[in-house]
Image (cartoon, rainbow, N blue to C red; front, side):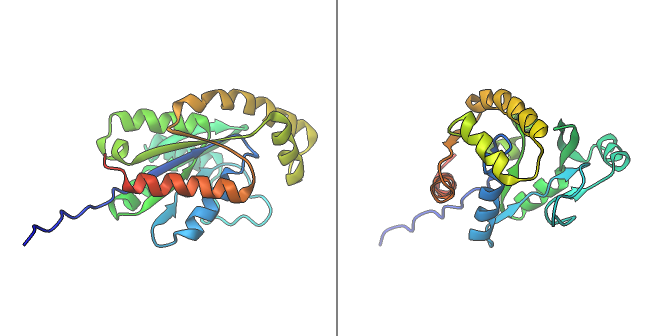
Length: 205
């Protein structure tokens, strides 16, 4: 009688997704959490910016005024925090560690500043380093990114130009990520990020 195979327990993942505004990263994260509702949780980011459209506090973001945000910074509540497009954004430590320790995979949608901070923290934190997988969503071209930003209809032309200027600098950071997904259409982008997720769940670290 052969010995039973040892039980393989996939590690919980902290999937860090970055890309310039208009790259489609938020849509991808939403689709992944909807496709794996029992396995993936999205980390809800904190911000000082005002809600847009039908955004809901505690669902899309945790919306704080600047004073409250600064109090949380001073209290060491954030794993990372940064200024992006003139507003403050941050990820609460408790939101990350609680889900990982409960065995859930996490999706964390961060700009390149915040992603760099998380990578640095993970270098000295075995729990985070073991879980971390980073993906950069790369637009096919600046022209395509411009079309996407204009198509959203949420920003004026001056803001679009400013976001494109920021995007050029952000796109230089791709080499710091584990994976680069060159964005095509929504369906192929989803299949690619799903493939990364499933492969990482099988990887022995």
